[in-house]
Length: 141
Image (cartoon, rainbow, N blue to C red):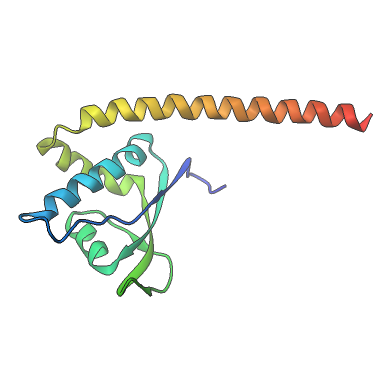
């Protein structure tokens, strides 16, 4: 679809309860790491998200660049921006976070499962497409 982009991702909204006492930024970092590890590992990806302006500013502080796709809207009483992030832009964050986090081992296992499932889904869709093409040719005769 888009040259040099092999996969697309959508990251939904993150919500961290205000009732949690302590340093909630660490929870956000863990959530971001888990969300971004897959797209980063597969490479050549494009992540699309809608983020509160405060989150976009936090991403920048965490050395995660993003590009604003359009005008912001007010959503749930906050300014929400449509953004995209190239998977390559995640390298600094993933490598820095990886040094202080042991969650990459579990994420590696998950990404390998995801890759295997993706290949199976692709094979299934090609098989289904081939079967449909054969049936269509048979009906056209």
